Length: 500
Image (cartoon, rainbow, N blue to C red; front, side, top):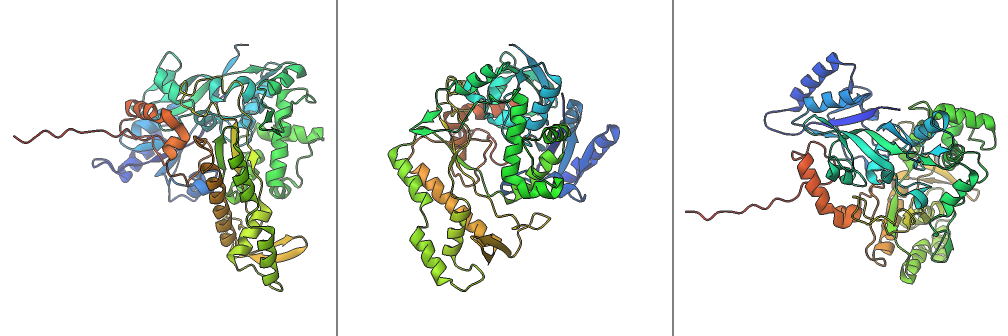
């Protein structure tokens, strides 16, 4: 299996090279091979360069190259040697870095040996390339570890344009960095990953019960084994369909005419058909969803202290019932929200949940924190507050509307989406303060980028960050592969000689 994905290429400001020279060389390369290149002047550029979660859109590449094979990446890097680029039993298989979670599950289900599964993420349209590089949490992690723990080798295009196979014995420092260190060291084109043999339903059940962490801090986590499913692939399809119904129900009704009926065999067959088609509706509806998703506000947490639990309860109680009731009374007879307290109360009403994102422990915590770049091995789970804007807040191009209507408890009100977004972000910051001030040594997960972090280097990678910087300096000394929130070059100390 090898499915290509878009590769963003950004030109740097070196004195000898320029964006125009880069474009000229890139156009020559495209003529020599079937390489699709999208430039800022092209109508498709905005869509091609878009980050899936537009809240995290930080890069504006000089070009977007659609790489279908390793040779395409080599050509691009060789053209761009003085520019910057950023990509993204013992059963094993090589998989292309652009393949999505849903496509990997579907490929294994339809073509793999019976009983074999992969440790995949819970979002169907997420690419496995970034999933592995950030660490990769999944439903089976307590039994088998992180997604990157399943990687036994990688094919990487280095900054000098050469292709290397990286594993525990060859380029071992780069292999270490590729498990949780994020992108920025080279362009990974393929992964060799282990298959997980689940076999019977009993084996599937064991995988879910293995960690012993189903009960954490007196709270029983909702992680039940897929005992009613004939295979893990069918279970994951069911999980993907459930998530898409929850997140994207209205979008699915627009595109399919219905949401997914998880009891209908025809719907399973249709979902599998779409999952096997890159860029299908499996990804389309979810991609649109990210336009009105506000942020993954998630922290990697240990068992929470009483002080942390109280702070989180205070967050969920703010604004108070009395404050919101007073705001409603003061606005009686109005048809439009105008006051900040009204927007805070609406934001709380629409999204006040705090959830455990993935259960960890078990095989994840059995690995030392410095054995791979991923540092949060001893944490129980990401604890998240993940609000999303009401359906109808955006136009068909994904831009916030100046005003929109929302019906709550039978009352229709007009609101300004931009002010509601500000209220959501204010509550996210309140959630962050509640955790950070009461829970020492917590961190964040690189695949859930949180732009408001100040010390993001330590939050993502902890004590592993200096080693990651040394790997960066060794494999990408000129910062070819860089973008915001990737590992930086180490600070170099210069000694000034006394004048003679």
